[in-house]
Amino acid sequence: MSNLLYMIEDHFAAVAEERQGSISGSLSRGLGALFAVAGDILHVGASRRF
Image (cartoon, rainbow, N blue to C red; front, side):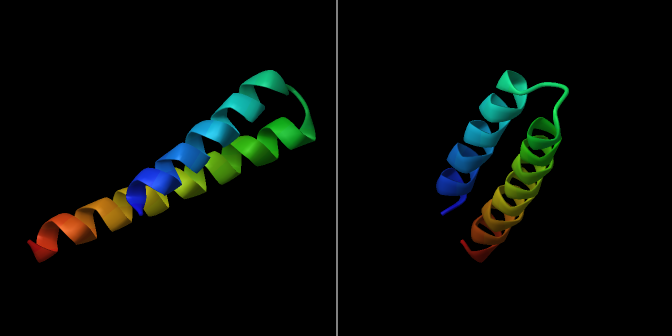
């Protein structure tokens, strides 16, 4: 699941790079950061279970 979130984060990072300086670029950068943090949390949670 965390890999999927990281893939989504990569997508938003690419969109943010493409649309630098616009509102959609800033929004994409924020969403990318959100998905990266969610992926990190799930990754840490999964590693603690085992």
